[in-house]
Length: 148
Figure 1: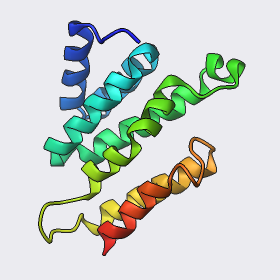
Figure 2: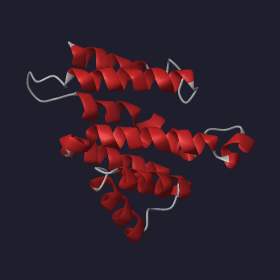
Figure 3: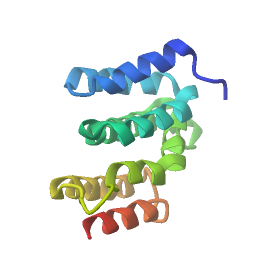
């Protein structure tokens, strides 16, 4: 897979920074779905942002969810019968993503409303077939540990 062009990486970073609004969420989702060849780099960047931007962690996760849903529903994904590149990239980075989202330094636990939203998201991913129960196992273990 070719490296992300500097312009694409910069645009993706800007979109991640601006996830505070609905319009920027939509723009990030569309940009990612339109650039499936850059899925690995985009997911890696999103995980890095989750590590350092506590206020955007859930917004980034919600964007990832929307990107997975749209990529899976795209005609090319349905025709090929294989997983879209973005879904594969999320699977590859899933443990790191949920560690960045849920694990904190020291005794601080993530807010209860966050863990409830994450649990619902994992259930949704399994129900719609985005990921299998086995693929979600590490994420669920991290969630259980974060809940104490």
